[in-house]
Length: 392
Ligand code: GDP
Image 1 (tube, rainbow, N blue to C red):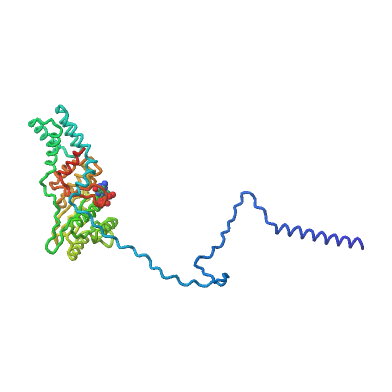
Image 2 (image 1 turned 180 degrees about the vertical axis):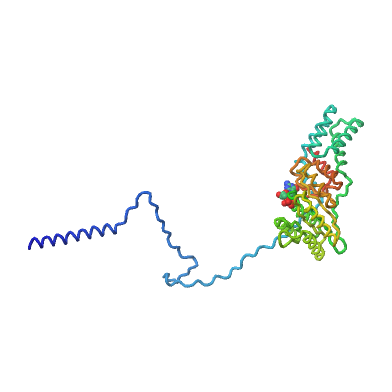
């Protein structure tokens, strides 16, 4: 019996020990093994500044914050209408852009002409420099022949005299007497209309925007017509330019709309608003596609049902050389070009293109682009241009 009692006591003690040890094992936190990721528990967010509490500060006594005074969303400030500078004197102001890009031609020519002996080889070199500057083969020959005769007849050797002769000859080739004024006078009851034509990338839309600034700077009112309906970006760009100087833009409501219809609407709107000038930007896709070029002719004819087109300005990139001249030829076949805008003259040493393109088309360069700034478009003037070339 005693043995039985002893066994029961031992069994009870044994069970108690097992239960105790097992429980401890269960509740003791398991040690993190090396390399196991740490679980990062984000603390609940702190109450916000606007969660007002009673003076007692008990959480459950929070009251609803009184409605914050209604905040009027900041209105976008009306864009300030800019007042661009007038066009007069712009080329003089921008002449350092020209002299920087063109002066190498001028200084090489002057260097050659100032040599002690002007032999056949030197005259050939002079001709080559002119051709390299895109003057064109025939005009280069003419310039050299004229200079050669004058130097011989007058016996000129002095560098200043040589410079004067060269200056006169270059100005003569560019055409000091060509009428370069823009036809911007409105008709009775209708605005003057100018069309911008040219291949994409030449700077056509930018030039339309800059020209709007030139005209506004000269005191005119302008409306823009975005008849390049194939590129919504072109219409956006034009609208931005116009907005800066307070000029409205008429544009299509969908891409690919009829450009002639947009041009017609622009002229109608310009007439209604009694603006002085309507500037129509056109599509400049590949000039080799006959249908697209015909479309340009159509735009012009449709405008002319309402009012004459006073200017068709061909925008040419001065850096494209012979390719630019080919473009000019094709455009001239479709529309009567009245003036040339040579862009990017700030980025090329080949200013001779002024002479070549005028010869090619028989129409004057009226404006030149000399940079990407909004007021970097200037009326062209041969004497200022040549003086910039010969500056050193
Ligand atoms: P579009 O396709 O003919 O309408 O050409 P854009 O007007 O879009 O112009 C093409 C690029 O030429 C743009 O980056 C213009 O800023 C740039 N551009 C236009 N005119 C001039 C200029 O006279 N000088 C320079 N350096 N860049 C110009």
